[in-house]
Length: 65
Length: 440
Image (cartoon, rainbow over all chains, first blue to last red; front, side, top):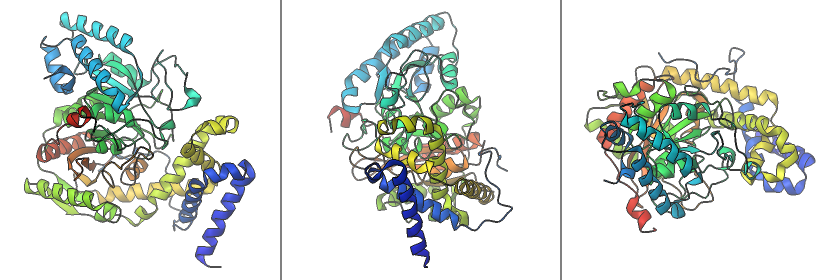
């Protein structure tokens, strides 16, 4: 399965979950927003990070040099 | 000069010298609002009674020689997500249309203690996200003022108040400030208390402020943040980094041309402009910002959303819904990207005074259905670095353009000094007053 198809499958899975929760009509009104969020999740999943890359827990706390 | 058109520095000097009463200043402001509000729609709630009582108290104190500081008797507007004791605070939402807080937000307390006069509450997009307020851009009433701090930016731009407060989670201070041709400051994350301000996304929310000059912004920042930036505003020509990759593919041609012209003027007066490379992690920054904001907004609204989903307008409804579906691991992945980008940007900024970019992708877009694009602002909301926008010129349609300066965290003094220097080189862009009076 190509990368693009996998991404589309993920977006569709995201929309299906939303439809189960809120119904087809409600989802149709916010479909574009849901799609963009699903695309962002997919893209972030492809960012290569190592075990040393910890999550931010205190934004703005690191002073400049 | 009418009192309503005075900057904070000018009004403060006159009040201190006994040549202007805070009461007269307020009455001029209220008249200005009465004249222009039907066109601009910057205010949700005005509080003339409370403002007059505060102005009279400040006038009495000034008459006795007691001046609390540079904001003594200065009228101020507050975005309608700031709690104000006894004064309606709606968050721009029909769900809070009758909400009246018991107490003031911490910023409001500090402003009142410093002698500022709260005029009222300014329009915001719903819950400070994207569903637009009715506010119009004073430079051209057919264009958006930007958002989410729409009313605060428009009120300062149209000389209704010399100072207004907003917030920024993506680009909600820098973007409307630039669209409306005023100075906007988003300080370092948590430099200013967010207590009593309705959250959109806790780890991204910043207090923001709007003025007409950098010096005014420094004075206001010092009052609410306890900094001393206004004492060190004289800076030599700076060394600024320009990351072309940040803007070149996204910015409209007119923005690029205006930015290049501004850079040439800064260089001509002695600034050293250095082309800088962005770290590889920049490519994931907007996705990371989107996921963090969606998840945190979903957490803020989860309980209410389950009961009142239909009460949310379309954009915030979609955003909260999408945030409720984001896997926990994706949220953490976004926070990991955030940390890497922040560290890599700090390293890239070494040896520079600031990073310089255009403030927005375009001049204020036509129409009121969108508040514009925050793409040039959200990276700095993600890192928490302090930013400021300074007007840099006008587009072919006479809409304001701005330059955005960014410094490492807690370097507000450096940032304000460089901004003041840039302001002095780029010069004033004038006022939208004529356009508003002509009903353009």
